[in-house]
Amino acid sequence: MSDKKLGKAGCFYDIYERSATANKDVTHYCPGCGHGVLHKLIAEAIDDFGIREKTILISPVGCSVFAYYYFRVGNIQCAHGRAPAVATGIKRVYPQSIVISYQGDGDLAAIGGNNILQAANRGENITVFFVNNAIYGMTGGQMAPTTLIGQKTTTTPRGRSQINEGYPMKIAELFSALEAPVYIERVALTDPKNTNKVRRAVRKALKTQMENKGFSLVEVLSACPSGWKMSSVQAKEWIDEAMVKHFPLGVFKDRTEEVQPSEAKRHVFNADDLHKKLDIPQNIQASREIRRTASSNIGQNARIIIAGFGGQGILLLGVGLAQAGMQAGYQVSWIPSYGPEMRGGTANCHVNLSDKRIGSPIVSKPDVLIVMNLPSLDKFEDCVQAGGLIVYDTSLIKKSPRRMDVSALGIPATEIADELGNARVANMVMLGALIAETSIIDKEVVFDALPDFIKRKNLISLNKQAIEKGIEFADSLVSVA
Ligand SMILES: Cc1ncc(C[n+]2csc(CCOP(=O)(O)OP(=O)(O)O)c2C)c(N)n1
Ligand code: SF4
Ligand SMILES: [Mg+2]
Image (cartoon, rainbow, N blue to C red; front, side, top):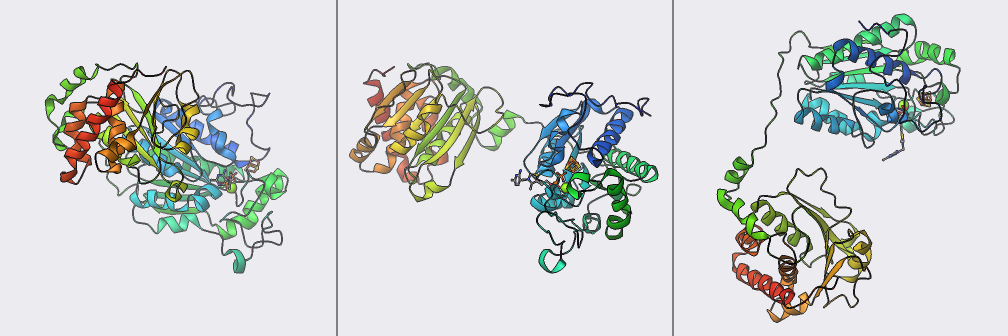
């Protein structure tokens, strides 16, 4: 047992340095708020189980958004309602970790309702602490899915009515109807007796995960004196008198005795296996050596944005680069961006080619910007890294990039493609220019990769010609620094 029961749990930071407030000794929660007490019970359990080093706490959007100010564990704060998805990802990649999804009723039962439902139904081996305070505390007291009938909130000023807003959602009951969950209990943070039950439930839920038995969810009825416009004492009484009537306390599901532990095995990524599966020759790594021939400073670890009109083959160019990059032995990512571009704006995609593992597919500061229309140049020029490269299609962009701290290579890609008899291969002309101007990727690797991303075999030779033309044109120029 923790020897610090009356003081601060060791799992809390001594001083909450991350907090933006002046007083770094206290939490941001209102007096009487249940979040703080639940934090303490979780922190003590983590200490007592000796799992601090392997615990990852995922805090939601809601009043507990700043849980990471307090817990001395691995912390992630995620998008509203998405904690179960993030927890799933982490747990599957790090099965030895203890992953906690900490969520409010707005977060779990409203915006993230389907997210938690699917995670529970999959039986993810995670622990969910669901703080039901029957209101959106953080945003000033709007109705939550768990708001009681008749309860006044800022969005139900006359009280919740089942005719307009439906019934308060009974999460513990609902989720215990699913087959996969192992342990589901509803508890309440009110008097010492009930608080002790919360303490036991917190521990049981963590233990369930530690023993690899599967999904558990503890619903905690929790006071929000500010949102309910009550004193702390009144708020606790209201839980006992009103909330518990609709949300009865107790264990709704407990399969912990019958379930056999099943430890998820982490799949260790092996590049050779992947090459075999994708039928990529093993000696392809050698091609990396001959990549380093061209003139620009841009070499390995290139972050690239490609942009233009929908229909110009922007996304395909990105796919091609990523495919060839993969065959050259890079770690790669490709992510498209859709949206208003479908209606004539800019279509763009982000490509990473890296020697290291890629943290995020999003490229915010590209080393290379390839643009095939003016709106794209206007949109992305400013975000190119100083020292980076802009390759632009002068057939369609009648002005030069403004930036003086980047290299710029203008190429009449659409006209060259037209001369080849098909304007649609302008994207490959641009790719040729990139090959000539940088050491990112070798022409031969791209040629090898072509059949993997140009599905119509009769077009492969035309695409090769377009790439050759792009290289030829770029080689005939001196890039403008
Ligand atoms: C995508 C998105 N939608 C809406 C919001 C506004 N918002 C912030 S917190 C919140 C509800 C929080 O309520 P709850 O999950 O019950 O947490 P509590 O503050 O009560 O602990 C909402 C709707 C947001 N931040 N992001
Ligand atoms: S608004 Fe409610 S839930 Fe949020 S900190 Fe205050 S009491 Fe707690
Ligand atoms: Mg709430």
